[in-house]
Image (cartoon, rainbow, N blue to C red):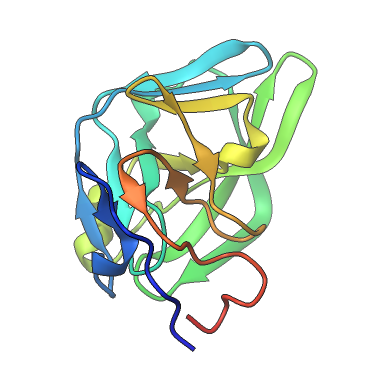
Amino acid sequence: MRPRRDASKPGQRSVWDFPRPPAYEQWHEHVEVRFAGRTIAATDDAWCVLETSHPPTYYLPLSAFEPGVLREVDGVGTVCEWKGAASYYDVVVGDQVAARAAWTYRNPRGDAAVLRDHVALYAREMDACLVDGSPVTPQPGGFYGGWITPTVSGPFKGSPGTMGW
């Protein structure tokens, strides 16, 4: 059953207007990621993956990350029908580790080629993710990596009962 869309407020986009297959856009918002008490990444050049029923997934350029905070994970991967094969990173600061909390597409397919050399993170694993100074709410559920900000309205896929959306 298709959900009933939330009313959008001025300045918001409904995730139900996002396409499938996804679109890739740069909004040039200031994105900041904090983990283990420090800022580990910051950029104004993130790419957003916009897909029906999902809040945007933010992909930050590798150059936005502090040296040494991303540690490659061997033997773990997933496949997206649109983007291709994903590889994972642990996020590491000192003795604090967020296991498999970040991912990348080394050889993204088709339109997703803009994501090459970019990394996405699960917001729920970080101390904070901020977009233009606003704290991000992680997309519901344990699988998806979308970031809910004041600029999008739902409802959002990921909660129990939403897998068929």
